[in-house]
Length: 52
Image 1: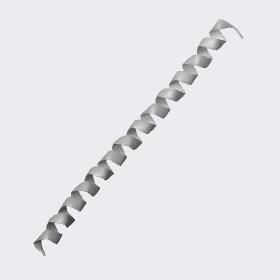
Image 2: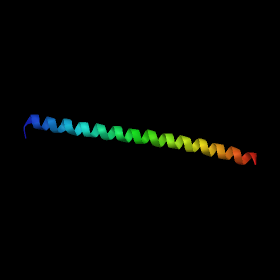
Image 3: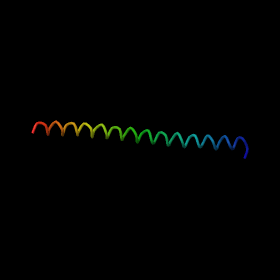
Image 4: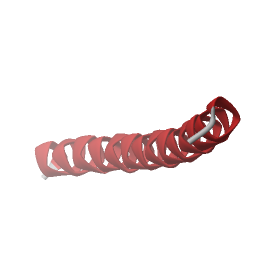
């Protein structure tokens, strides 16, 4: 394998890894938002229960 082929292979690997990183960052952000909403709902339910 020539150096140019190896460089292209590594560049492709970097591109794939960056795409995967972006995907996981997006999943993390979405999960964090769902968690934040769940925490808010829980706090609301706890407040409602205390009012009973």
